Amino acid sequence: MTMSADLYQQVILEHNKKPRNYLKLDGATHTAEGFNPLCGDHLWVYAKVNADGVIDEMTFEGLGCAISKASASMMTVALKGKTIDEARVIFKEFHSLLLGDLKPDITPNQLGKLKIFSGIWQYPARVKCAALGWHAMNGALNQLQTVTTE
Ligand code: ZN
Image 1 (cartoon, rainbow, N blue to C red):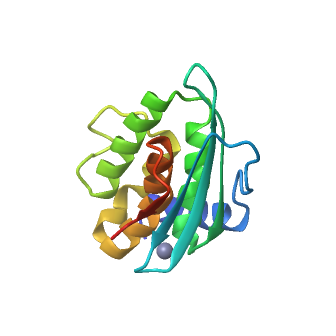
Image 2: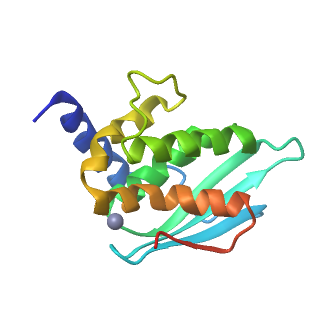
């Protein structure tokens, strides 16, 4: 097992055990439900966006596999304090990373810790798990109610 695969395992397990910002957010300005029928992951993402377009708070809840929960958990940490526009840029970068199009060591990016997902493109079924919370977040920012990975 390579170093990065090992780190990936550790981080996924840790976030799955102790997901960050795992609660329903009262007074959310944006919310969406995400469903991944392939795996059965079912998450809700909540955001509180202030008048300047900054994400003051982001939370999630629901049931899903370790990868979907860990990815959503890391997303809430990464996007808190970002503007909606910045969140959309990071979503795009993360999506390219999941598909294997963005090579984080070559292409400049703002992914930070999210880079641990860089090997996941080799497992297409897992890509949908990792992307679910993000699609729900993007849907929430676009005022959509429900998002599925299909
Ligand atoms: Zn899953």
